[in-house]
Length: 170
Image (cartoon, rainbow, N blue to C red; front, side, top):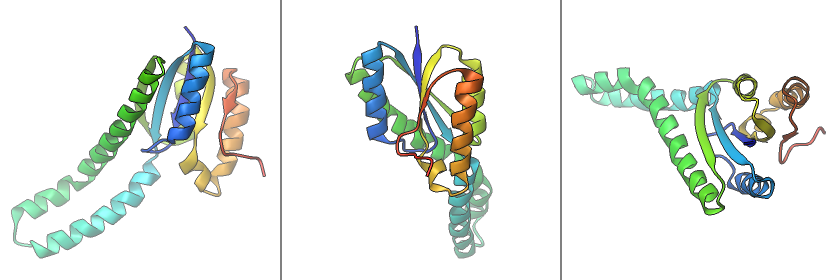
């Protein structure tokens, strides 16, 4: 059985791009593999905002042991919450795929988008095409170059076509 990969670089993948990918799978009678890649630098931004709130909470409850315990557990709890939010978004996507009669597999990775994507594709020779929902990557000015590199590496090294909706070389 052939698979089409839908790889998203955010907690909340684009519903519109996903729907088009599901339609493509239905037309090609291919299965769908959804890979959600959450990038560490996105955690860092959320983590810094959370640390600020934790510091204020700690100051307010300085004498409370529970505040100190919460502050120590805050980092791992934040990562867990981000993954849980991602899982919630994937459940919505699963319903969309099921409604179209497309078999879908879902997985999550934490790491740099390009690295995790190439690593995944190297391990899965049954992928015949990749659709990249790279909205977080494309929002960074320096990351547009990474998308260009991916568009060269994947077809050359992995041997499959790649679609990046909303991206142009200019």
